[in-house]
Structures are given as C-alpha cells and as structure tokens.
Length: 94
Image (tube, rainbow, N blue to C red; front, top):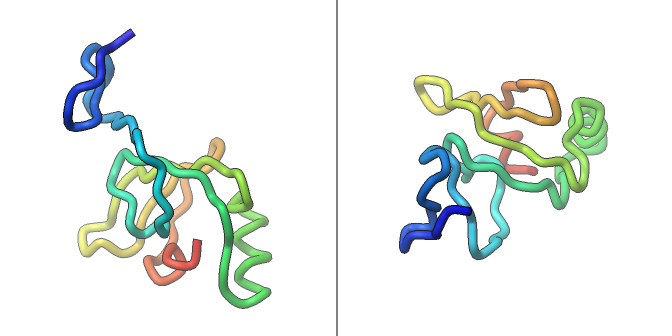
C-alpha cells in the first residue's frame, strides 16, 4: 500500500483523497471539496431533521463533499448514491 506523507496524504493513491489520521468533530459545512465524514447527529427543528433523514442524512451515513457553488452556497454532497445540494445554514446543523 501507499506510504503516508507528513501532510496526511498517501503516496501511490489518488491525490484528491486525503486520509484523516485524527478524527475530529465538525459540521458538514466545514468540510472541503473531496473530504468525507460520517454523520453523528442531525440538529434543528423536527421537520428539518425528518426531511434530512428521508434523504439519507442519518447517524452513520458517509457523506462526501462533491463541490461548492461559486459563492460557496449551496454545497453538493454525495450520500450513498445520491448527489444532494444543501444550503450552508442547513449543513451547519449536521
């Protein structure tokens, strides 16, 4: 396999995939393009939480940032096999 470099990347792997050695808690809105994370909690009003769970944002879901809109809002995420655009204010609650 590839050898990890000092900046967290592994030689021999695609340069767009960063291996996070230290897991950290952050909102989805804080992830950069190409980074992925696991959903731990969905905050907000009941109706919003229900809708997010309907579109696969529930505990344990793996989410990858696909791209940001030109003005950084909304953000396109890949969840399971779907690409979903979510406003930054909603992504702050996940």
